Image 1 (cartoon, helix red, strand yellow):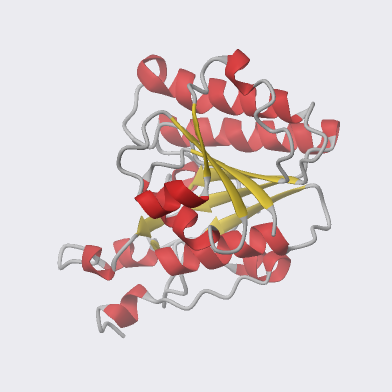
Image 2 (cartoon, rainbow, N blue to C red):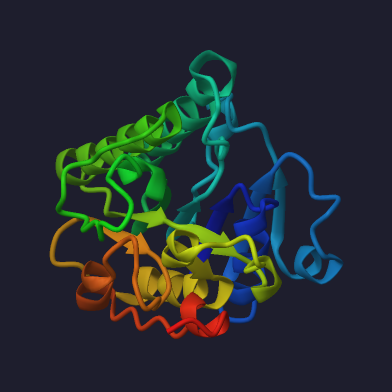
Length: 248
């Protein structure tokens, strides 16, 4: 049983990961409003209400924590730099890694990067983590900063990190409606496959202190390559959007 802290724990992915991990690990969930978090999760986890923009609110937050899953941040691809990206996608990760340099028990940080870091590639291209980044918006640029920050601290300060470029996360198959085209299906990431990927991020032994993997399901065509996650994390995605929609 690992001691895991999840930031942004009340968001869509955070809630589902908490449901998945709570039976196997000791969770600390950090956020500002837990009113929508299921009561059974709140009863089993340590709940911390805190504004992570304030550096002082990080003091001691990682004491005893072995793994951090960093989900807190702005998720809107159309977000403006000064309105929200600067605070949520630049300052919060900086505060996290600054505190991590003082955390004695910390083994690894898992950060939520995004498919938007390479969304400037033409449709139909399968992008590998080794391909040059090509953001299509400032949100994607903020994820390039996040990956750079994680790499800097990994190689300069020994803070092991994995960045997951999360594709189109779906909680339910009902979200694969008739309007989802083949390009949309190529970006599909099921809740179950995301859970499998996080398990691998927690359990794997890394060859290098920093790793980038793509978070996408086993689709007939995938916008992002799964090779890096398969090789380094033993990731074995089971879901396929094309099969779910009876295409191919």
